[in-house]
Image: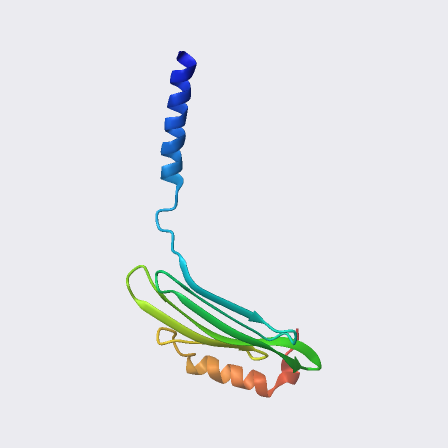
Length: 126
């Protein structure tokens, strides 16, 4: 009889622990698509139940005689404080370049330094 009582108590604690450990906010995926082509190009997108959306397109490009993947896309989400954010981007031989209303512009001094570095590659040493 003591074992039965202990077993019931164990089950009760197990169920309470499982309920506490369960994620409170499970966000479903409401749409999803993916397409990968033999030439290396691809498209994918998804949207979740909380309004988050992601979309990306990629392709193979020859850069300096080597194949590289370049991509562009966008994503949007709502922050915990209720603010909506949207970002579009390009990722290629020039790096990752995001754009969004909330992303600050590059300060003028840094932009000038980047332009100078690009114009004088012979001075760039690793």
